[in-house]
Length: 349
Ligand code: 2RA
Image (tube, rainbow, N blue to C red; front, side, top):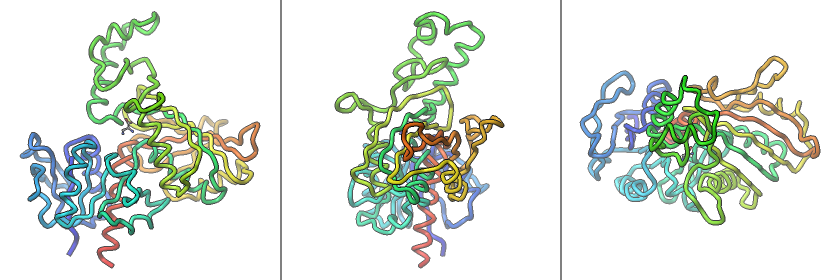
């Protein structure tokens, strides 16, 4: 019999994309049960072409479930993931609650898929969307050249903070479009007023050098996640990593400018060869023909797109790259679905 799956947080931005992905991929699941907060219970969502009623999060909701994919806020996940595990489910968790736990593997199937088998707590963590939007490309380069340092600047989409982020950006864009705003200090901020939504500054006609919450010494939680998660996934606990996370007026698809330094000398031709052959990566790199990835071309696709590959002018061991990945697909839902498929493979023996 096919294993039964629960999608927990089914009505959120990631949950909805996950239902689409589960409907498109090879159907490895028996029942797909949709679970959400009591507020959303009773709603009907479509998965695999059928309407399924959402049930409220409760202990009983996990009866008979083999694998549960969670996308809930950290504190809610911290409370409910152990409940699902105690009911016998393997949990794939997309929150930050367990990613740092040494007994919880942090898995990207193309990079460290084997790690999913060692899960003493019955939990497999899904990385943050910022890490996931670039790590498949970095993992491929690391396997060949040996990564020794990473400097990343992100250009993060509004939907990274969920549906409220995307809705806020749309509303702000309609408020400023055709107005001539953006020419005087603070005019956009005044026009947008108190409709900042989840962002600390206007996002329309702007970029905001902030994502996540304030941590020690001025770092943001997003910046620390990139560092901690890249180290854990690549098995490089001492890897020097510096990130600056920036929110941009893009609805969906995170972009990253990456400076990656390696143990060995690199060449652009060699990097091209590695990236072109890497599963899950699309090399799109011909600036003379105007070819490089942009978020509005990449959105809705599965791979990690890489362009602007250059060898650093002052360092023959370093590469500069521009990487784009859909933050809701590979950045969240797709990676969770792929991890789920690894677990199904195991359950089948
Ligand atoms: C963001 N990566 O884009 C985040 C969500 N955890 O805000």
